[in-house]
View 1 (cartoon, rainbow, N blue to C red):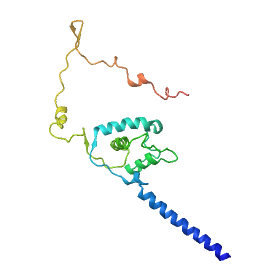
View 2: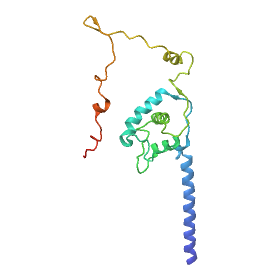
View 3: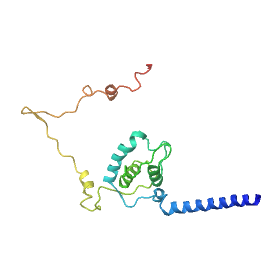
View 4: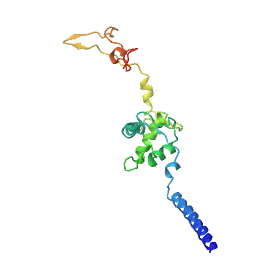
Amino acid sequence: MRTGGAMRIQGSRGLLGASLVMAIGLTTSCGGNQAAAVASYAGPLRSRDIERGGQVFRTFCVPCHAGRVSPEGYRWSPAQMRRQIREGNRAMPAIRDEYLSDEDMESVLAFLTVIGAVDAPLPPVRPADEPIDDETAGHERASQAPPAPVEPAVVDGEQEAASPATPEEVPAAAEDLGDPQGPAGAEP
């Protein structure tokens, strides 16, 4: 009888092993680890993606992260960020695509890449969707032009000369805001 019990245990282990192999195969073939599969950006970053990413980051991420990109304080790869966003962990719940579209997630990653929070090579940045040519690159030449002349203000029919404010008229920033720690040497 002892032999039969050992056979059942070995048979159960074999069945368990086969089940695990099948489950892993199904998970892999169904894209269960898809978030980590894509690890680099295709094409240049567009300024509108970066701007949109900043808006989405301030809406979804800042309330919990309060200016920190990750609690560990180190830069993750784009694949790690995608996985964290979609799958979450004990410290951060998963953010599914019904709340954050794939396009918005990629915009956030573009924003994080530009500010240096994602450890990825920085792709070229383009001002818009259109390719750069002589007409769209004209902003570089325009920024080198001299500033337009400033006309003096006219008040009640009289022209006032523009003059810079004197130091007495502009209080120091420390006087305006005060020291957040209070006066030096003061106890709370």
